Amino acid sequence: MVVDVVTLFPEYFSGPLNCSVLARAQVAGALRVRLWNLRDFTPDKHGKVDDTPYGGGPGMVLRPEPFFAAVAALAPPEGTPVILLTPQGEPLTQRRAAALAKQERIVVLCGHYEGVDERVRGRLATEELSIGDYVLSGGEPAALVLIDAVARLLPGVLGNEASPEEESFSTGLLEYPQYTRPAEYAGLEVPEVLRRGHHAEVRRWRRKEALRRTYLRRPELLPRAALTEEDRQLLAEIIEELSETT
Ligand code: ADE
Image (cartoon, rainbow, N blue to C red; front, side):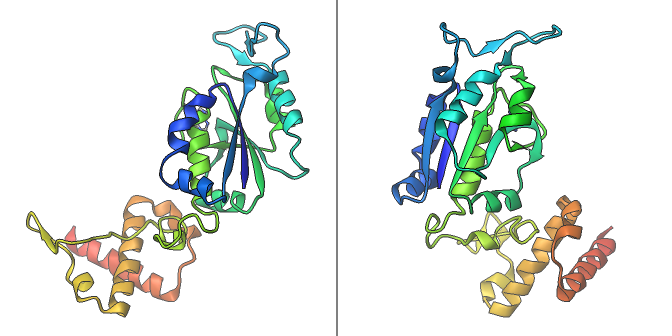
């Protein structure tokens, strides 16, 4: 997959892109990230990329021309997602990341300052994504989050590590608790069922704990998770257990 990132701060990406999974994904040839400096595409002879907002008010707005010129120069094939990162975008979800991981190419536009000229949203970006309900000083950290979430789903990137299908959200539920050695630490014990290692019991326990965690922390995820008859039974047990302890 090729990811073209248009940003005022290409240097922001060098650390994270050269570590861990993102570095490996690039070495393996699964991911190629190209960084483009927005400033190189401005028609302003002094390199200015922003201007004051029409109608007045504080702050600066990023002009539309550099974004349009950058995307025109990249000439992405018809149908390539052109994603503007903004707190006003649709929330980035595991489902969206998985859909983007199927693309051969995506273009990512990072905003900065007070905002981006509305014509970039309406005409250039095919979608707007937000990584959460808080405001960052720019789209760069959000672009890195997006690239990470997508890259680890690309074939061959995680190798033999934990399969992405088992983890939080892929099943529609939060992940079950994990333990490793020692069996007892500071008086805290690893649950007996995990130590016994009976496959079917472990599976049931994990499913139940994933359901418990989701029910307690993110109940709004449950209606959208594909629950089996066994899951409903486990949930009933959880609710029963909770009513006993209160
Ligand atoms: N730019 C600033 N804040 C953002 C957020 N929460 N998500 C995506 N892009 C952003």
